[in-house]
Length: 82
Image 1: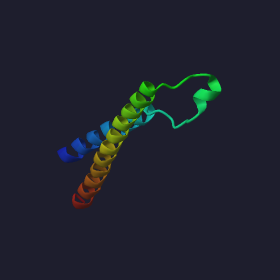
Image 2: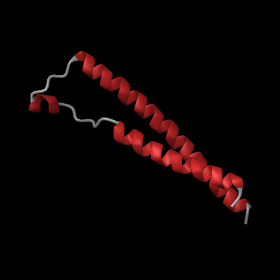
Image 3: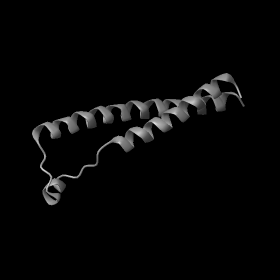
Image 4: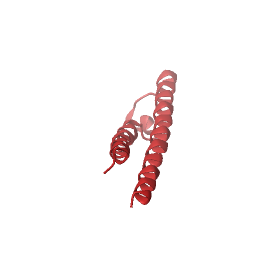
């Protein structure tokens, strides 16, 4: 194993864990559940959740792109080091 394969493998593992964590932190899309349970959604709580979800969605995309690039890089290295 070369040094680049080790580095890209480590990046792949880190990005896998990061994607899992960011997806788990995102809030589900359950509209209207507050009415059934008696919880009242205020304007502030709706916008706060929306901004946090937008932040997490943005980072999910970034981690996914880095993950895909690491997979492609590992495959290219494996192809040319045979």
